[in-house]
Length: 335
Image (cartoon, rainbow, N blue to C red):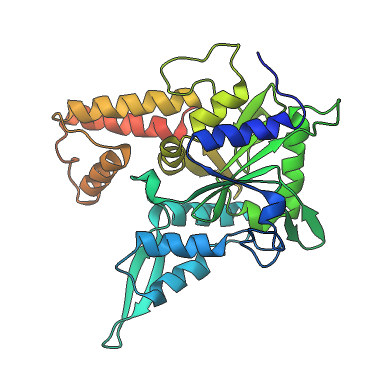
């Protein structure tokens, strides 16, 4: 397997992300005092104007008052713990954020403001920034690469220190644990974490221990990539393709309570992700030849369940298969 060394690792990450449609910015130019500054202070982890623009673009029917309500709520999810705040943020990301505004007649109206467009990736704003400096409390830290969608820092790629010959992929893992304790505001808005030493690369979540940071071994899901292909390239192209990234967040990420009040955030591995997608497509066809997305299928099933009837266009056999497949999507062998 080809190894990437020194500063070439970070440069390769940005190049691969650029090839996937992510815009690329460099931290020093992007700093509050930099040439392309989008923050007034290092304490800000959300790119405010990009978030405002995204909300306006995706919610053209909502008045300015409602958009401002959403803008205030999104960076400040509620919860007593970091894990609870991350779950609250994830729910807003997937389901939209509840907003209120005053109608012309003086009455109060409620609505859901969309944060991301999960169906049309190009309607979102995609940005990767290296050496993104963040300050919180007495701490000043600089994650290697932060990935923003509509101004929200949804993923972090942490690389081992290239000048430390004894550093390993687990050095990068431990660095993320430090960041998590010292930069809780940044991590409350996080969806995925990546660690790499240029040779070995793994994907995990906020709550995942070492054993649950797993490789991603395929790009398109058609085959496991050859051992000679960089693990870093495979994971980046397999996960951060814009459509797959949105799908992984919306349909393949769950939070589980172990009964003691401790929340675990889990995301499907590459084999579950691709196998379940195929299974759901087959289920939809078995239900009368109807096609659609996993979200369409879930919506039809949930609508039928709430109404006390079988999901539309599904016979009993295909409905049972759908339920089993959906359980597989969110429960089996997750990381």
